[in-house]
Image (cartoon, rainbow, N blue to C red; front, side, top):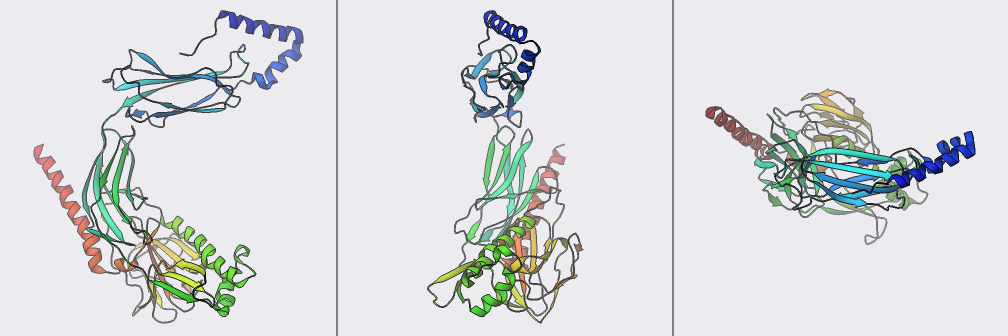
Length: 470
């Protein structure tokens, strides 16, 4: 318990204050109100965001004071017993203290559904008759030991390195869920509500630069209880092409210099440094913009989602693949001066060929973006975005709704392009994935359409069984 100062200490405080006021008059009073030692701001107490607790994980309480803390006490009560769980009397003026509170086994009624958490703190100020400023905060903690329920209803049978997959699952908790997401390849993918309450859907990806992969649904309630449900997937590792490209003086003096001159931070006096600056630093900045625009996922309920195979250019031919690891050299192939990854699928047909939308969506970006040149990005829902780089002409603007068959742009050679072509990219929640999958009607049928069909059967059969029981 926090020790209370007795009447004697209080009396001494009064005497000292009276001496100051009487002896100093108005000057003494002004001193009391302006002196740093007599500041009047009480400590701040920060308790858990949610008033739930699983009684397993430690609670974190933060106490802060602008002048300096002197003491604190934290107690837990089940309504009958009050148990001190954290106490300190001599903090010597520290301005921040994080307290870790553990459940006091054997001291409280384990059957109690609600506990009272009370935190008291006092600072080092000489205000309040030298007793300091005090703060107190009390919250009710609802005790919840049960983990959320998670069931995977349907998912893609396999996923390729650099590819995409779909999962539909059910998740519930007696109270509200605090966190719900798909963890895949060490990244978190947002899940959208699907069909009705308690069901969710998510597209996720296996980054092509990572050899190992695992995916699972993570659900955590407000008490901190969590459950992980593995998404069973057959993994297909892929080997991506490695190529070495000679960086000629004419290439650096031409395209590279043209790009570098657009912004001073990329322009370097030395040729090879200029190449590296554009190929790596500018590229990184351009991709950061792309990731920012393609990482957003709606919170709205998904009633249905359909995607057509992408057919972009009439009589288009592939000129470069996704995932190529490109190494640049000047004269000696063994001396690499720069490197980068190719994050799209390049196609070419005729000069300034029309680019058509294969799927409806909303334009979230349509502007110039460094090495990608003129570039529209379209949101197709469920975290799936398409990107069209090096365009000569943009026929859409940000905010436009795009329809199937609509001409959205024309191919070109803006940005870091040596010839007229389309750089086509697909991203799932900000992660670049293999476009070739989304060009394939059979892949979409097996990995997207079938998953929705299988999940719908389970969801509607469950509803029918519930209605029959009623």
